[in-house]
Length: 294
Image (cartoon, rainbow, N blue to C red):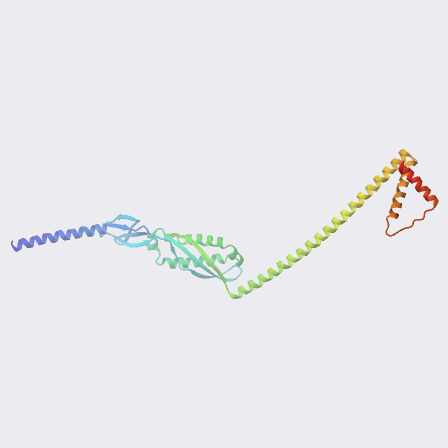
C-alpha cells in the first residue's frame, strides 16, 4: 500500500472523526435539560432571546447561549434590624425577615444587580414609613395588620423585578432601656390603680349587700306584723259577728275563755305560786267553766 493511499485513508478518518465530534457538540449545545428548581435565560447575539423552563429544551447551537441559570426556589433574606420612630416619638428597633422567590428571571437579571440588597433596602424604608404612622401601643397590638401592610407595600415595590414576596415577618420590637423603664413604671401604676378600683368596688358591693339584707329583714318584719294585725282583725271580726248573732252569751263565752287562759298562765309559772282569789272571782270562774262545758 502506497503512502498516498495511507495518507488519504487517514485524512478521511480524521474528517469523519471531526464531523462526529462536531455533531456531538451541536447536539450537546442544541439540547438543554433544565432542572425542576431552575429557569435558564438564553441570549442570542448578546440580547435576551428566551427563558427555558424545567425539562428538555432545544436551542440553536452557537447562536443561543444560556447566560443565566436562576433558581426559582423560595429564598429567605438574612434577618435585619431597622431603627424607626413611632408617631408618638418613641425609638424602636424592628427585627424583620422576608421570604421571596423569582417568577420572571428575565426581569430580575436585567433590571436589578443585587436582588437581596435591593429587597432589604426596600423593606427597611417601608418598615420605617409604616411605623411612623402608628403609636407605640398600636405597633405592639396590631402586629398582624402591620405585617400585612409591609408585605403588600414590598410586593408593589418589587413587582418590576419579577419577584414575588411570599411572606414578611416582624420577629421582634425592641425598645431602648429608658423607654422600657418608663413603660414598666406606667404598668405598675396601672396595676395599682386597678387594685384600688377592685377594692373600692368590693367595698361598695359589700355595703350594697348589707343594705339589701337590712331592707329584706325590715320587709319581713313588716310583713309579719301585717299578717299578725290581719289575724287579730279577723278574730275581732269573728267575735263581733258571734256577739251580733248570739247575743250576750257569746260575749260571756269569750270572757270566760280568756279567764281560763289567764289562770293557766299563772299556774304554769316558775316556782310554786299561791293564788288568792275573792269569792266573787270564784263565782265568775265557776260561771265561766259552766259556759265552757255548755
